Image (tube, rainbow, N blue to C red; front, side):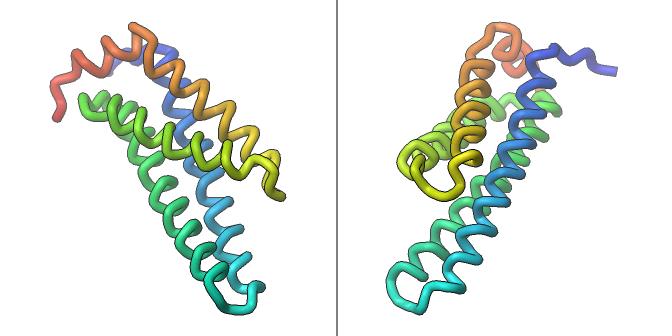
Length: 129
């Protein structure tokens, strides 16, 4: 059995929670476009929902890749966290305020954890491609 550092477990849990939050927000945006009467805004909300769904899937992939000690997990995790933080900051005043706060805090924490020597060593020493 492979011994995994505690920081690695924290990254996996944070990535899973962020994936769930992105799914919840995607459902909210998809549902919001149903109440909007047509037009550009409804299409934009659907595009946002699809983008969040993609980010959620990527976050779950990151969780799996980090747990599996995949060498490519680090750069993908970095990109996905930035892809979550930027829109959360831009939409900070929306109705999903708590979701944005949790997303920013978790993704920010995950970014910090990604730069810990322990995690970098665990992912860089893995032989899996």
